[in-house]
Amino acid sequence: MANLKYEIVETVGVVSEGAKGWKKELNLISWNDRAPKYDLRDWDEAHEKMGKGVTLSKEELLQLKELLNGMDF
Image 1 (tube, one colour):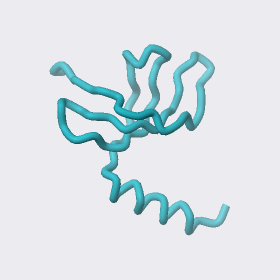
Image 2 (spheres, rainbow, N blue to C red):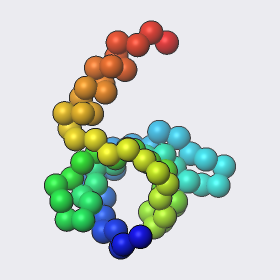
Image 3 (spheres, one colour):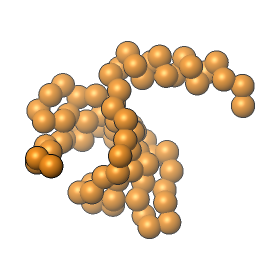
Image 4 (cartoon, rainbow, N blue to C red):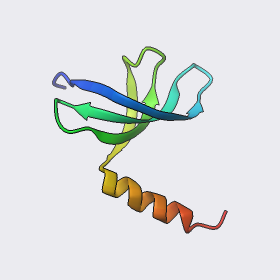
């Protein structure tokens, strides 16, 4: 896999933490010098290793918020 360049522009918050210290975080990240997008994935403590995740534009994140607000829990 090619080198992946990323910069965490803003940490929005931690969703959960695993037993080994990895945290599922919502961050605003610039991938490969592109415009930042919202990103939800697991990170190690140093933010050097990451798990699979999902990257969303602001519009997609707002649509997800609407969907979640409409759910009955």
